[in-house]
Image (cartoon, rainbow, N blue to C red; front, side, top):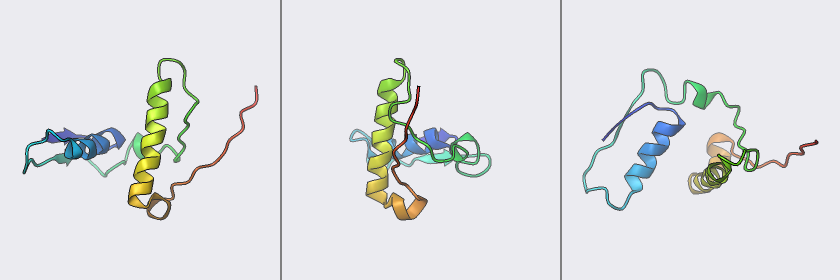
Length: 93
């Protein structure tokens, strides 16, 4: 399996594809990136993820993404490995 792009979408696609129960044994997964992993927009987001700052069309995806980031940080020691942390924010109207 060849995945083109080493940004957040490509890397996550490779990771979750590797975990998929129907993946045949000994399947290789390659990620191809023209420069460096997360060298574009994926590496420039400043690390901000928001659980509930989404409109109706993306609200479910926003909640899922936020939860998955937390799970991956817990599984791989994200606090130490890449500075994962939760912060409370206040939004005023």
